[in-house]
Amino acid sequence: MKTVSQEVQELSIKSLESTFTKLSNAYTSMTVKGSNTTLVKKRRDAVKVGLESLQDVWCNGEFFYDRETIVQSTEILLSIIPSIDKQLAKAKKGSPQKTVNERRIIALKLAIESLENRLV
Image (cartoon, rainbow, N blue to C red; front, side, top):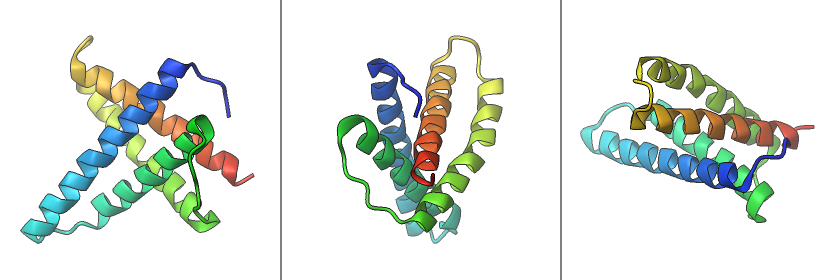
């Protein structure tokens, strides 16, 4: 995995933690409303796997996922990036939303790289 600064590591972990929390809250809200939660659950679980992979690499965390889960999580994380790219294109330069989405893209790409390295 490519070397990144301590600051990028911390921002990436915080970004994925925030994304996980948002997806968890959305999942809970949608469950209460009786909405279809399949996509949100898949994304939430994939973000968790990606987050734990980065924490394992950078913070000596623990990672116990099997190959199938890693492959599925990688695919799901890859599928999230285009929607964030669209949001990023609409965000105004220097806006908080632009910063959040830029960090989220970096975090997702690093998580994907980390997961792909586990498949080698």
